[in-house]
Image (tube, rainbow, N blue to C red; front, side, top):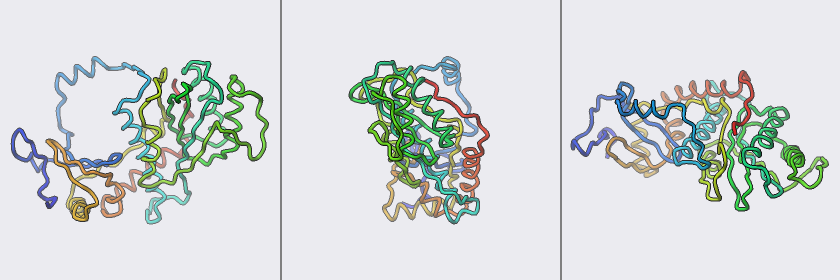
Length: 315
């Protein structure tokens, strides 16, 4: 079916909604969705009362909801896109320095004796301070989860080069100072213990899916006391790009449909495509590519302007 026929089919009215309304597309982790702009929509009294009722409430349940998992995946997605777009060779606003996301895992070497809040306050925050001072880590996202043995461990994502042997040694020193390592570590150039893992993940279409597999998964081994995840302000405030549905986008999405690279599912008030089309549309749509370059250049400046004060993890 040609995309010029696509509208938002409302089953209750048995017709398409007003095609003169602005239609938008957002590309999320694993899917893309087209919907009518709600820019001029009015908030209802019921919605306002619900907002007022829950305003300012913070309730840490120790697990990740599906909505929070999707949010984490999307933050990683936008971060990865920012690096990809700014390092793309044909981007006139791009940068020469090559950056990749780095995936760090920290585990305890002995049975946990402190509660989760203390572990995050004493060990995680101390590690974040070290990584900032040693490696210049300003941008990060962390996730805490329980292992099968009941111990808390951490996944951390950042965007700076990290010497895995130095990081391993420092984490073991932090552990030792709180009773989680048997003897004081002695540094050697190839220092290695099983308490840490460091992986460089090259930016691209699948990078956030790889990391989200670990970071945004559920907590099947038990609840975490206090906050389950957090990130630096610089990462939290990255801006995503929303496509305006125009003739160029329609033409290229129809090409993808005809090539069977994506499937389309029509719902009551939106249309869902069964994959993330961001990179396809970035390379196929000249107008949107120029807009994306500008927005992601601003994202890059937020990440690397070094204007923000370093933040510790809120436990």
